[in-house]
Image (tube, rainbow, N blue to C red; front, side, top):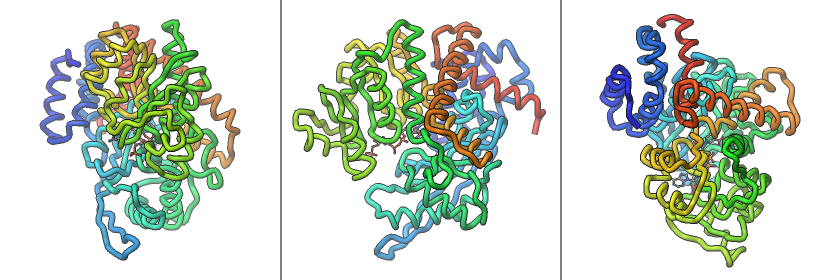
Length: 448
Ligand code: NDP
């Protein structure tokens, strides 16, 4: 992944120097800049007007203390973040992640990615991301509630339905969104669509829960069909067993595939008969148990501790849906050796740059996250629309919108790649198509 244009190469050096010790952010910026050389060569105004320099600098970073009390009365202090990266094409939009690995660099990488992803949806949403190093795992519902209330007590000053609309991400599901929304409503004294991923009784959208996983499969389906392949009869491996992984598994199975493996941060299960998804949902969504419990009901399946081994399972299609940098070069080579013909990223940046290079060099069809997992945020934008209208659409209506958005998105990315001389490279195509809409809006505003 090299950057051809010398201005962009220097810019990358400046980004690295100005944001020390933030390797995930560097990785995300490098990936985008490495696609944009043909664009800035053809349109030097993006450099001359400062668009490129502005784009790599968040409009605003908010960092705050989050004190909360546990069930024993002990006080803990976590860190909260919201990176409002770009409002060029709409209110900041992007999830909140609660995970011990969260620090400013992770939120910046995710916020940066979100700019292009949101642009690709074709909907009017800017890019942002937030979160905390709080770990909801092992906490009681009341502890999670007190944490969420404290987090929102600070965050509510900076967000609003036309300013910044957060959503869920790792560690932030329906329960957390409920606590966060309840506190926002109390503090702001208004009932507005300030968060998405809300419960259906208080303004949530049907099909939002399913949207990222379903959207991933809709996108992958377009890519496969263009190459004369399909999910029908394919063997699929999916990492993770959270929101994205579960609904990717559901849709892949509906498309006629057999999903044989899933994982969590402790290890993975391999069920050659096909994953029993209702059981995974019960274990992860209801009982909040580890994936290892799967083999208690299915003793014929295997459980392996550790995550990396999941990519050594022979499969036709791999869907990494857990976390960043979970699929490295060795994993990519194992997939290639086993005849895998497509990888579609459900998580954000799950493949390392070396893995992406290896997969593309071997001719494996590759769907990058910022395009392939955009269905979640697209449906969040549909939730915002429904909230603004004080109306709701049926599951089928939302799902139809999602399908159309993912199909359009695939064609936009594919066409942009062809237009700039890299036909078939969806990484470049997604970066270019996402960039152009944001950059042209920034040009229209002048330097601000
Ligand atoms: P969840 O919290 O619902 O699930 C995350 C899953 O990944 C869990 O199975 C978790 O295991 C596993 N996981 C988390 N961290 C690690 C790790 N360090 N190593 C191995 N496994 C890990 O999150 P989501 O499903 O919502 O998100 C998954 C990915 O998809 C993230 O990259 C997120 O940014 C991205 N994404 C999510 C969207 C959404 O709508 N939810 C939208 C677009 C992107 P465990 O339970 O053991 O922690």
